[in-house]
Each structure stands twice: as structure tokens, then as C-alpha cells.
Image 1 (cartoon, rainbow, N blue to C red):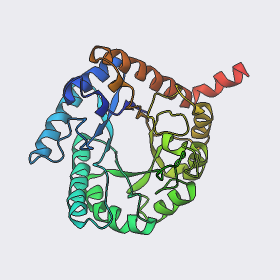
Image 2 (cartoon, rainbow, N blue to C red):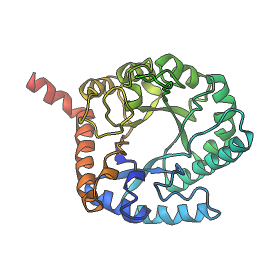
Image 3 (cartoon, rainbow, N blue to C red):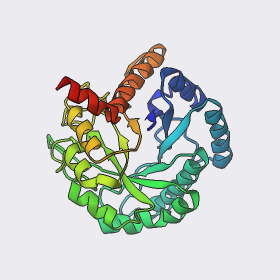
Image 4 (tube, rainbow, N blue to C red):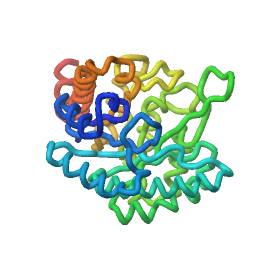
Length: 294
């Protein structure tokens, strides 16, 4: 079970290699490589030489004794009615899956389109990228989403935002190629029709990856676990109950950008300590500790 973190929020510190080296020194043994083209990261999936860049990065990561355990594809995956965008985006997502395979990532997270039904997402987003996933030996992590209507205080249901809709999406997809990436923060936002625990209990063995972060149950804050309002004790218990064996991956990407660059290494060490704690709690050895203290 790797402990990892998204790396996009650390890019003020340096390029891919500099950030990955810093994360290793902080105590992480893996990282989540973002290919979201939002200007915040050193993604290269849209470059003509993307494959050679990926091979070079893989060589560096291996040399550092690190791993890239999962990746995040470009977003949004589709825009209803915008065929030009959708065609280009599907090509980028297929490239992202290829890059994931080169980097050795086992999971590439691909968001469903918030404005599609489960059937439309299966046909228009996931079916076209299935061949790339199979060819590259990469599983696709389908992520739970959220919406918010103008003027509303709380979030509203979206693609995969409830246990029922998440399972409906997954039921239309090949189990060998597709699984669930549960975003804990999204699941805990009031109004989505779910809690993280209800999601975990329903997804069970279809759960292959996590995005771990905290919030105030209203806004998608992406803060460090245990810093806001989400009850991570209940989440740990639920994950242990289903026998979760995936990785502990943080997506607390609002923390580092608030800090001076000089504090990034300290922030990364703090994040690694949180991830190590979560991994220790998910270990079977924690059962004995709980019994001893009860």
C-alpha cells in the first residue's frame, strides 16, 4: 500500500523531477501524476513528444526509488454539444492512459461528464478509451462528482455522486478495466446524496483508488485530512471493513499554494506524516491496538 499525493499543487517549487525528489525526501513512496491542463502543473500530455518525456520521467522516478501509483487525466472529459472539444479531449485522455502505462501507474482517473447520464458516459466517455486502457494495462478510475446550482448553499447531485448512481455507472463498464476512485471530500459535501461511508460500503470491491482530503461539508476545499469537518475515523473503519487494499493518496491540493515556496518541503513532510498515519490505521496491525485501548 503506497502513500502518495497529487503533485500539481507543488509546481511553484520546480519541475516534475524537483517536485518528485522533494516528495521522496518528505517521506512519500509514490505520487499521483496530474495531467490536468490547468496551468498549475508540468503536464506534457498535449506535447508532440509526450511519450519520450514520459519515458524520461519514468527513468528518473525509478532511479529515485519512487513510484507513480496513479494519474489524473485532463478535465473536463466532455462538454455536451461541443463535438470539436469532445473529439480533442478523448484523444488527450487516450494519451494520458498511454502515459500512465509508460510511467507504471496502475490507475488513471477519468471523470465522468457531469451532464451525462450513466448510459451516455459509458458510450461517449468510457467506451472510446477502453481500447487504450486494455492495450496499456491501466485501470480507469471513475470518480464521484458534484454540482452546485447558482445561489444554492449546498451541492446538488451529479454523475456518480450517490451510491446508486455510482454503481449504475460501474454496472455498464467492464470490471476488469474500470473501478471506482472515491473522492472523500466530494462524497461528504451536503446535498450530493451520499456520505463517504455509504459510498465505501456500496462500492466494496469495485473501489480501487482514493482521493483523500477534508472540507467543511459544504465547500470542496481540498484541505488536509483531520483539519476540517469530515469524520475520518468512520472512514477508516469502513475501509477496513471492506478490506480495502489500494493506496493512500492525498488530494489536499489547496494547502501548498497558500504557503511561501520555502515552506513547501515542510508542508510535504506534514502531508507524508498524515498519509503514513492513515496507512498505519488501515493496516491489520491496528486491530490489536484498538482492542488494547478499548
